[in-house]
Each structure stands twice: as structure tokens, then as C-alpha cells.
Figure 1 (cartoon, rainbow, N blue to C red):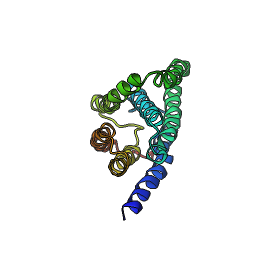
Figure 2 (figure 1 turned 30 degrees about the horizontal axis):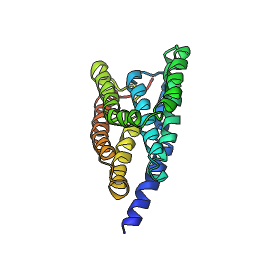
Figure 3 (figure 1 turned 180 degrees about the vertical axis):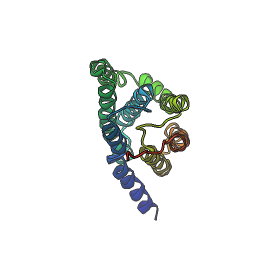
Figure 4 (figure 1 turned 135 degrees about the horizontal axis):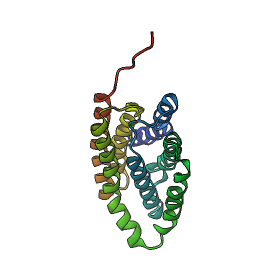
Length: 202
């Protein structure tokens, strides 16, 4: 029974994450706008994903417990490029990408660096959610923000709480997923609250 639950949680998480950001990317492309999307939030989320993936690789944790993160990082990069494109400043993307690539190697130079980064990872990821919330509270319009993407993110956090308890039982990782679950639900509710009705032209 436990093996079946673990199998379901792992593979359903991978399945969801394979297209997690696609509704958000589609919403941007359809609206041809990045309205409602917080750039600081996206950058902080990408940083959190990168640190988490590097931590898991460094300690050799089971691949299925974090396999979705390369997929999420690739989708976040695509989303980031869309934001820069629709904001009309594509050239500004290059320095951010350079920092993220170089940080991948810096994080694993010393054990204390990756451990410190992982301890800060929860705060970084939480800050990304609060940045998005703050932006939504400010503009009171969720614009091109996809509630489906945020809702699916909440689901993956819930499944990862289960898989963490059943495999590594890493307290740092567990706390991160619990906090992210609560914040993802909060953002989803806020996006739905500020969703503007679509007015069709006569």
C-alpha cells in the first residue's frame, strides 16, 4: 500500500510538473502581455528551484523525489523570457541567466555553502510567493496570471510532503513543502479573487 502511494505521488507530481507552467505561458502568449506577473517573484522562485535541485543532487537523494525540478526550471526560464519579451527588455535577461548558471557551480564548492543556501531556500521561495501576492494586492488585477498553474503547484507540494515523509524524512525539505503548500493556496485564492470578467466585443 505504501509503495503504491509513493509510486502515485512521485509519478503524478512528475506528470503535473511536466506542464505546470504551460497554462501560465499560454495565458501570457494569448494576452500578449505580462500584466499581473511579478518579475521579482519569478526570479526568486527560479533561485529557490535552483538551490533545491542542487541540494538534492549534492546529497544524492532518490532521483524520483526531485526529478520535476529540471522540468520546472526549464519552464520558469521560458516564462522569464516571455516576461522580458512582453515588457520590451529582452536584453536584461542575459545577466540574470548568467548569474543562475554560475551559481549552480558555486553552490557545490563547499558543504557549508549548499547547506546555508538550502536553509535560505525556504525564505527565498516564500519571498517569491509574497512578491506575487504583494503585486496582486497592489494592482488588484490578476491579468495574465494563471490560477491553474498556482493550483497545480499546491498539489505538487502536497504530494512532495508525502514522498518526503516516506523516503528521506529530511526536516528542512519537509518544512519547505509545508510552507510552500500554504502560500501556493493563498496565491491561487488571490488570483481568483482579482480575476476580471472577460468583456466580449459586440
